[in-house]
Image 1: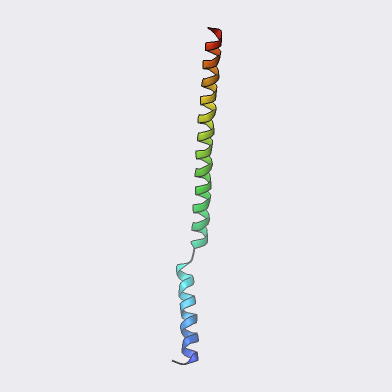
Image 2: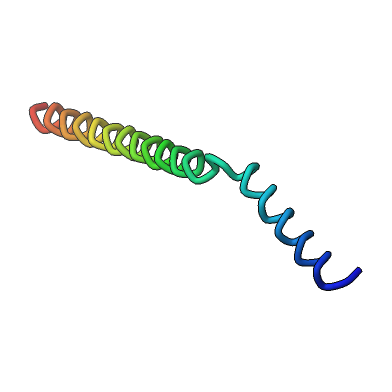
Length: 67
């Protein structure tokens, strides 16, 4: 094969790759946005659980101090 055929093959390969990649950036962006939201939700749940445990511990300590 000569240089012209290699160039034609490269152009066709790059052109066909762009067809398959259409919308790929948007899907990737949507995935990472959903991932960040889920991680934030999980962190909020953990923080709420810790705050609830601390509140219960303080209530228990107050009850024991009254006795």
